[in-house]
Length: 197
Image 1 (cartoon, rainbow, N blue to C red):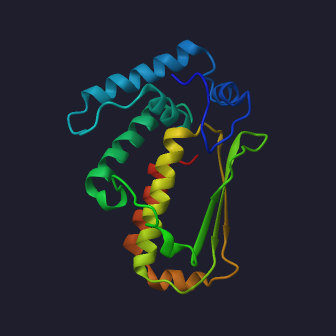
Image 2 (cartoon, rainbow, N blue to C red; image 1 turned 90 degrees about the vertical axis):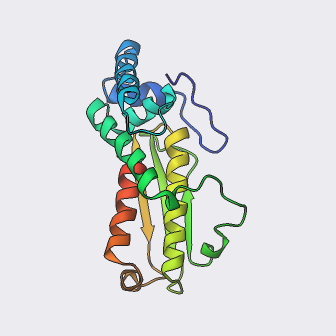
């Protein structure tokens, strides 16, 4: 169970842990422990999972992102394992420095380190150019998945506020360079894997 919130990149309010748990009616230690125990037992019973050693902190964060609903948390863990099996290209084992440098003139992403006073995390996307191809789009998907994985492991929040800035780009250009199937995959990856609520 998560007891202290510490991260080198993300800041938390002193009462974030208690506030988020209280909002989901999981503020009593035994309630959170019981829910995480249920998830832990369920994971052990899943024969099709390659990885079964999820930490209790990871399971708790999954439960928080699922609004405290154990069944929804189970679905999210199941979908995450499925995605990692079916779409391994979006989940690299490691990333070399400079791997995403070609995205810099096209798109910028920022995750604000401080939470809002309501304990929400703010994400900012700025598309700066129309000069990209489908390879850039796939690379950006990998980047977003990597960020979502980091957030899932290290963040503890009430939800997200996402701001998209397309002032310098034409959204129709994006649609012409991205197939509907690709778009569906990335939306599914971001919502289910990233577990935004």
